[in-house]
Image 1: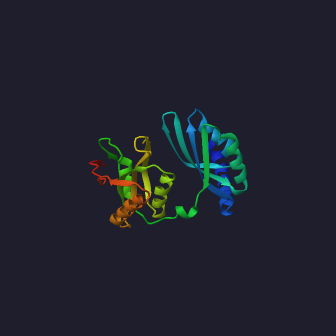
Image 2: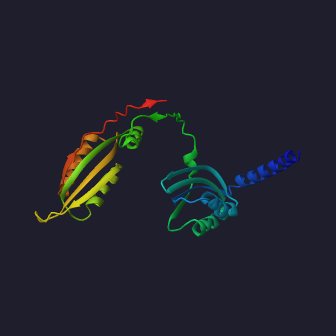
Image 3: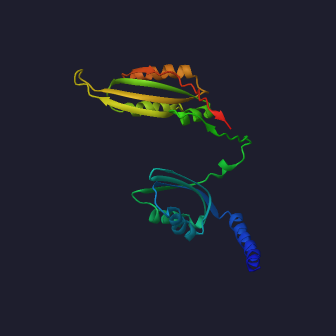
Length: 237
C-alpha cells in the first residue's frame, strides 16, 4: 500500500518536472561514444561520475566487446546549462591512456520520420571474407571495384589516390600498401591494393577509365581485379 502511494505521489511530480524541462527547450541530447580497454564497473563509473551529477538521463545504449576492448554508445540528455560541466566531468573521470570518449550533440532533424519502410532479416550461412562489406555495399546501391597499383615509390601517393576518390564522393573500403626495396633497379617499388565503393549514380565504366588514367599520371601501372559478385548464398529468416 505504501509503495503504491509513493508511486502515485512521485510520478506526477517527475512528469511535471520533465514537462517543464523539455517545454523550455533547456536540454540537449548527446551521443556519447566510449571505447578502450574493458574493465568491471566502467558503465557505472560513467553514470555515477559524469551523468548523474549534472542531472542527466541515459536513454538508448549499445555495447560490444572484442577481446579485451569494448565500445559503448549512450544516448544522454543533459540540461543545456550543464553542458560544459558534463564535458569537464568526462575529461576528468573518463579520459585516460586506455579509454577515449567522444560526445556529439544529436541533430534533431535526423530524427524526423522519413516515411521509409523498416525491414529486418537474420542472415546466416558459411563464413567468408568481406561479407559485411558486400552486404553494406549492396544496401547502398554501390558497385565494388578493386585495383592493384604499382610503380616507382614517390611522396604523397596515398594522399593523391585517396584525394581523387574523395573529390568524386567515392568511398575507399579497403586500402593496403607496401614498399619493396628496389636496389637492383635503382628505385623502390610502391604497391597498393585498393577497393572502391562507387555509387551507381556515377558512370562506373567511365570512373574506372579515369581512375586508371589518373594512376598513370602518378607513374603507376594498374590492374583491375575481377568485379565482386555478391553471391552470398545465405538463407533468409
